[in-house]
Length: 380
Ligand SMILES: [Zn+2]
Ligand SMILES: [Zn+2]
Image 1 (cartoon, rainbow, N blue to C red):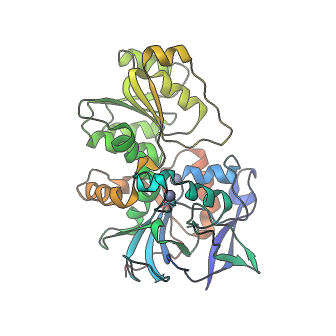
Image 2 (cartoon, rainbow, N blue to C red; image 1 turned 30 degrees about the vertical axis):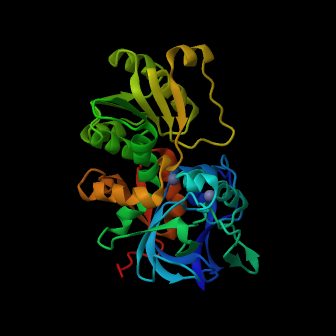
């Protein structure tokens, strides 16, 4: 079938993207779903900071590609052997593709599946297939999803079926912002009632970490960002203390918290943010790094301090989530108002507005802009 898609052909272009247009909206050919694959009509896809890193060229990917890794839509077709979903079902996409058979997958850590990482580096679906073409040449997949398009063919395991009454523009955000943010708090850090938690970086991931810290019963929740408006929102949404990022910030937080916090969630993926996050982690505490920096970024710390203070530094990829297990739990929390992702929505855009959307994200003032590549599609 033919469809419109935003094709990323070149990275590292200058701002504003609205003028340099790293992505071009063009017609491409999408193959029908192969064995174990499904065809999804994309209802909503979030613009995430990791997409921006790909566009900036600091997270290199095979090009040309269709990026976009956070979304929800409606199943329109299924390939041979697909079980558990049928046309008309609503799904949330999962950006960490997994094989279901390797030692990571069977031990409940499919987010670490090496086959999934290999497929992402190669620009294919997890089977190795490429289903998008233009003029006889393949267009690369991204995260096994490629959601900045009207439709996507993805592996069955890259989608989780959800109930139809959940608005798809809210559901989309669970695919990335919610899983890495809330999952870092619930799964990776295991925050308990009474804990003292800090969140460094208040984008879509950081705000979901904030919601989750509030829901966990954390007693003290410190929020840090370079944007004062985001700090004001964080206070409204349950942060007990907020600090504007800057040279004095670490000392201020350490003083206000008597030496730092039990758990620090770093959700910015920037060198300064990680240094700050380590500096405000209390003795015996844990720094959880959930923000994805560029591939070349390095972070150093004093080894003697790590040992004598028993600090931990942990990575958290997709919030250590098992999507099939955790998305239903997280949606149940959303239904009870504990993960109010609709508050994060900074507006809708169509495919033709996607470059300008990434300009706004780069400026740092927006949380989640939602792409609707098919306009406002009906729910069945
Ligand atoms: Zn993301
Ligand atoms: Zn696997």
